[in-house]
Length: 150
Image (cartoon, rainbow, N blue to C red; front, top):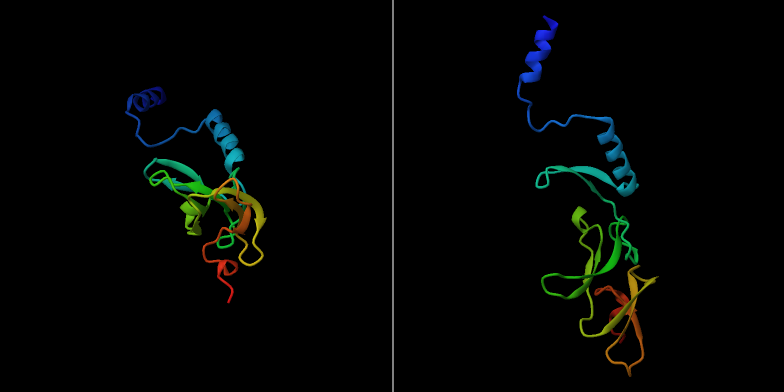
């Protein structure tokens, strides 16, 4: 009787969408979590990808200073794929941080990891030609240090 029940269960079609938990799958998931999961990360179900995605892992290699608005991500220089223009933005953009600022487009730019004393955004060095000296300014468009002094 018991053998017959096992045979019937084995012949039934398996339900889709369920994952059979095995030791190899668990260890693979654990190693992936150790690589990408940090103190600011959390798991979220992605409906479009149909799998769990690690969100909030905001330690980019090219990050300059910590974001002053969300305090989680880092500000970095980004080039838009669509318009090919440069701007300064937060790496935590997809988790809700909207900190961004346009940058000089025709100038040669060197972004530094030193923060502005007023707004905590990174300072950038720029010049328009090779004959010109490098000038230093804050990357934030709305920084009080960029306003003309009367």
